[in-house]
Length: 110
Length: 117
Image 1 (tube, rainbow over the protein chains, first blue to last red):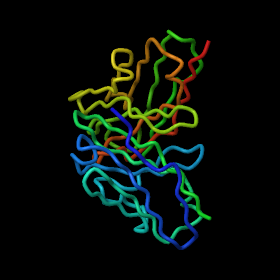
Image 2 (image 1 turned 135 degrees about the vertical axis):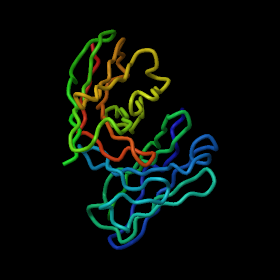
Image 3 (image 1 turned 60 degrees about the horizontal axis):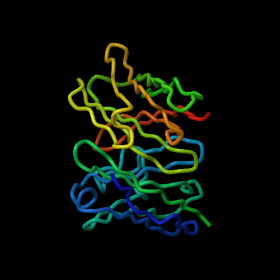
Image 4 (image 1 turned 45 degrees about the horizontal axis):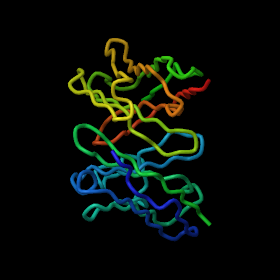
C-alpha cells in the first residue's frame, strides 16, 4: 500500500485561495470516489474536512471544497484565514477495506 | 457528545506486547466500523486496521498483519488493538476513529506507544 503523493507545502495570503493536490493510482484515487481530506493542527487529532471527494461534514465551512480527476484529487481552501494554517492529509479507499494516506501538506497562511 | 478515548499506551522494549483500548460514547458503537490509524513522530498518518460492525470484516495493513489484532466489545462500547512483537518502527501515536462516509469522521485524542530498548 504505497502512500498517495502530496506536495510538502503550500501557502497563500489571507483571503486568497490555495489548492492542494493528491496523486494516487487507478487502484486507489482513480478507482473509487472515496477520497477524503483531513486537517491536523499541531498536537491535535486529525479532523475530517471532505469525504467522498466533494462532501463536507456538518460544521465544515463551504470555503473547503474537493474534486477529483482521474488518479488525482484536490482540496481547495478559499478565503484563507489564519486558522486554516495546518497540515492537510488526503486519503483514499484502496479496496478490501484498506485505506491509504498521503504524506501531508503543510499549509501556511502568509 | 460523541467521544473516543484511547488508553494503554506506554514505553515497551522491542519484542514486547501492548494492548490499546478505545472507549466510545455518544453514538451506537455496535452500528459502526472502526479504524486504527497511527502517526510516527513528525510523520504522516498511516491506516493500520479496520473492524466492521459485528466483526463482519477485519483488515490490516501489511506492516502489522500477523502481529496486531483488532477486536471490539460492543457490550462495553470498546475497541481494542493487541500489539505483539513490537518493533522500534511501531513507535507512534495511535488513534482510534469511527468509520463513516468511507472515511474516519470522528477521532480520539491518541495514545503514544514508544518502542525502545
